[in-house]
Image 1 (tube, one colour):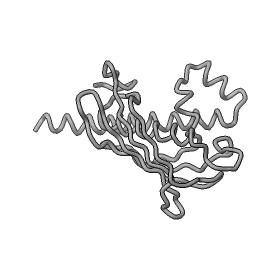
Image 2 (cartoon, rainbow, N blue to C red):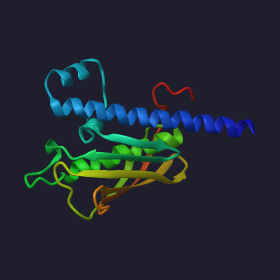
Image 3 (cartoon, rainbow, N blue to C red):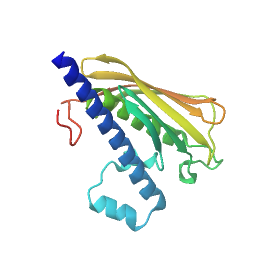
Image 4 (cartoon, one colour):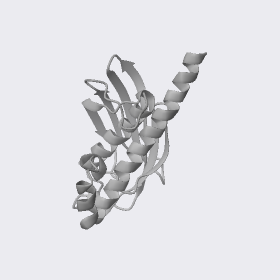
Length: 179
């Protein structure tokens, strides 16, 4: 009984950490999008995660818990190609970050991608709103498998699916975790 209670408390703390990490990346992404002194201040203060933040400006996080992360994003102009389509590299970066948040909420550990597969089904355009959902589907030792879907919010049409295995070589804990 005590072990169950400890596990539930851990999951709750990990979910908070996953949400905090994703929201912090989004906030930094918003600073990057506006440019100027805000970006320099963020770098000077040591607000890392610059790569994680690039594809996530103004991300709205609706859920991060128990191995699942769900959020929405309005596609900004700086993440589009010359035709106004959400750039495929930006989609990949966003999927990677949402999958990482799902893992943090399940394991309390920030992991890196070791195998990453993406399938693109349709374009999302500038200013369009997309929903992203990722979920942990399997764990094997230090490896965790995650699947993510990106859909147009207006129609539910599938934009992309990401499948990845993530790992941590030493099981590094997320900052501020008491575990």
